Image (cartoon, rainbow, N blue to C red; front, side, top):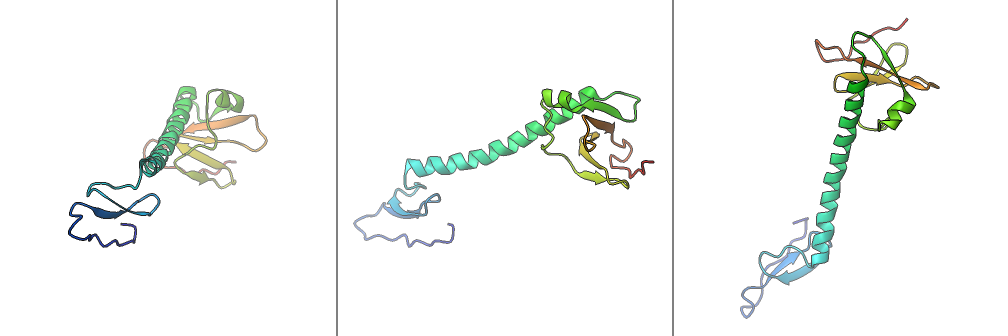
Length: 147
């Protein structure tokens, strides 16, 4: 109970009263045995903070899936590298700060970001991004020296 111990004893003339510690404000309160919060305000505050953490996780998943969908829609088959306008990506809701699986640095110092079956790169001072399909056999990155 968050490190605070409360002795739950009352005189015999209060047989159904229990002492608890509010998990939100850590105030000691008395009440029914199944009461967990000192007030409805504390209950709402704690539950809302828990829900906001869940909403934040869901937002990351939505960004990730939207980015993956964009890359999938704009991938050109049988082409090693597809060039896509950064302004087109932004118009379609691509989030460049969003979550990605991992980052791979190649021998020339360029960075590729992975989302599902695709990798993308944003060259410095460029109006476009580069996209390619990941290695399908091992589903891992290949280190390629670009000449």
